[in-house]
Amino acid sequence: MSGLFITFEGGEGSGKTTISKLIKEQLENEGYQVVLTREPGGVDIAEQIRDVIIDVRNTHMDKKTEALLYAASRRQHLVEKVIPALKEGKIIICDRFIDSSLVYQGMGRNIGVDEVYEMNLFATENILPNRTIFFDIKPELGLRRVYANKDREVNRLDLEKIDFHQKVYDGYKKLLTKYPNRIVSIDASQDIHSVYLQVLEKIKEIL
Ligand code: TMP
Image 1 (tube, rainbow, N blue to C red):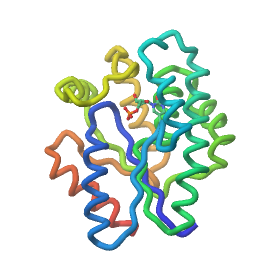
Image 2: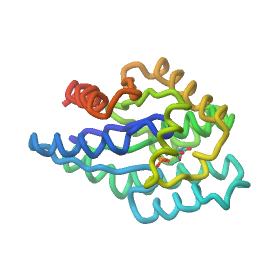
Image 3: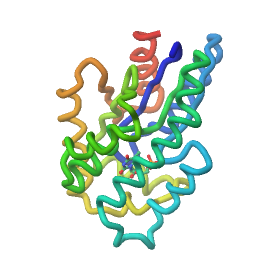
Image 4: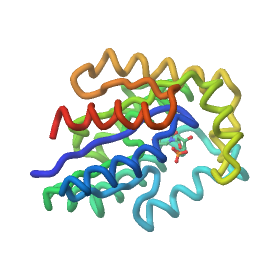
């Protein structure tokens, strides 16, 4: 596959979505073909699965059911959108991927990182991003941003208690040491333009 698979990771309110749009615009101006997408979702079936996962009525969902639904959504999105784009030589920027499952389900929900990784292999067949950018922002600050942004959907996971988000944050920090070549960290607490410049630099390193 000749394209580049880049993923953005981080807690709630880290600015991934806003930055991804700016990066796409810049790279397209430079002549690259860029596909912007997200997980869970990105294609119709996966978006339908997303609706079930994040529905605030589903607070009683079993944690393994939740992990399986994320993996199912991931599989469909990978097969229908990511792999074809990579074969066409495009740059695909995906808002969240397997690392979200490792930290949210593996660590946040205490299923275990190795267990969640194993379960995901069935879905991903070990396809990993060429580069993952971790948007480093403390959970309190990220959540404050979420609530300040009236247009953003507030979902079931936003409503988790602060210690869940702290576990997720600590989880990402652990992943950084586990995959030092793939995952790079940027300071997402800064203003949008500074964050954008940091992200662009990390992407340019592998172009
Ligand atoms: P989003 O708000 O970034 O669109 O993501 C939706 C929520 O789903 C977010 O709270 C993170 C969570 N999530 C997981 O718990 N596991 C996963 O594998 C993915 C992709 C997202």
